[in-house]
Length: 105
Image (cartoon, rainbow, N blue to C red; front, side, top):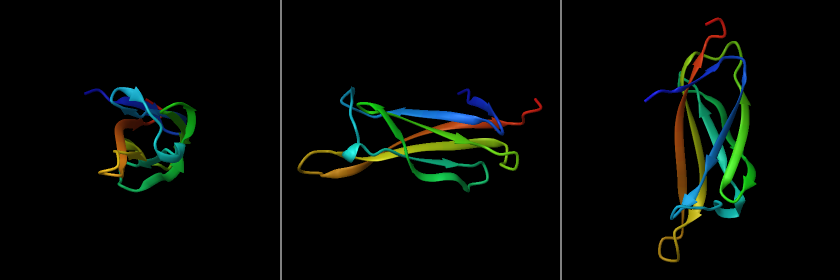
């Protein structure tokens, strides 16, 4: 697997598509949230609300600074999704990994 690389100190756009049965579907209340976990295990951002672009489609911009560590970052999107009367609402999570590299490379 090849990771998408971004230079440190830049703004990064993350987007997500939530689907149910192959159909774009909004999480409960049209609320999608994002965490970005740095390579050292601390949070760059936590629980921020994504911007809704359309049914099931969300994005969020975040920026790394010159003091943020290099390495692999985990981008985690989540929201609650109805699984029907029997199961109720459950957390729907999607994760991706990106690599933050030095701007001098």
